[in-house]
Length: 432
Image 1 (cartoon, rainbow, N blue to C red):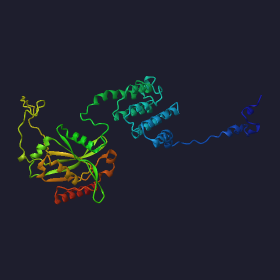
Image 2 (cartoon, rainbow, N blue to C red; image 1 turned 90 degrees about the vertical axis):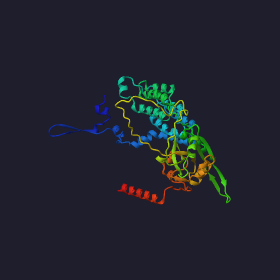
Image 3 (cartoon, one colour; image 1 turned 120 degrees about the horizontal axis):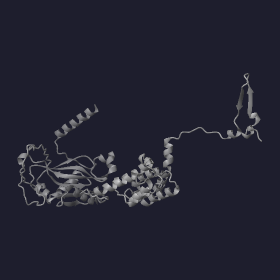
Image 4 (cartoon, rainbow, N blue to C red; image 1 turned 45 degrees about the horizontal axis):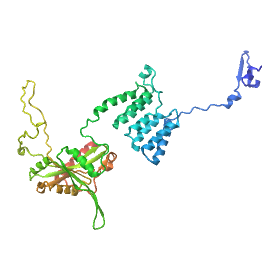
């Protein structure tokens, strides 16, 4: 039978016994050779950036490799399939779904319900389902539930209604009482109520032709079925005598019969004004339009026209009702009437300089001969004159005026100097 020291792997020389005067035994034990071979390494703290790199390394590499080829729905689905087949346990699925949600607009699948259901299928099934009321109360697996709610919120922002497959996936992943399932129930309750509530819907895909886009925009602004849209000039390129290419913009205008009647009654001694550009947002596209208007009439020239009861039978413009008034009824109403003057016509063009708008006024004279006798003044503001998107409007480059545009201000030189002095004083006061 081996000695106790030999069992531990020590020799007799490794243990030395010393005696002191008080007859107390002091033992000095040396480490064994087996322990000397396995030395511990000092602890190293991992930085948060390294953790993020390790978590997002797989997703970043996958999307970057696919982006080199093409950004389509097929390649996006291919990335999801590669991630699902890579690991059975779906490690890093939360980071992958967050990265996929950010990449969806680049691949053009942000409005595809099938792709959202495929992203939900990335979650492991029946793992995050709470087993009792305590887990349900304390938000079982919060990171995964927040990720599922974020996916449904992105669907809500793009106006996509979930289907039955979405509900089945959510119940398999988070259970019937999870937060994503409750989010799904709220979406299914409110979306059918507000889906067709807008009386003036905008199509998802706007027309790419600038003339068709201007026609759609002017019809939307006028909101008059009797208004007539006229294309005064189509965009084309012409060659000058010197051999230079001259690109002419498109000019599209709209005018209703009631506006023509008001313009025919306009006082010849008072000028009309061409003002703009005014912005109009259609989803992520911004277009600009110009108006032909006049100043409001002075009170001495305003005449109330008699009411025509046969103008509208279904919705009469005037009601004569005699109700008994109570002591609490107040007959005096403080209503502020602000008359901005009549608007006679509107137009859209890709180049809003004075020469282009003069062509629009010349085209209006064919149906409105009064414009040949009335002076027209231009109040054009320096700003964007062409079609632009949401990304261009955020940047500061789109606010520069067109280099070929000439703006004629209707104000006199003295008024302009006074305005400049007031602006200088305000800016000086703000600096102080």
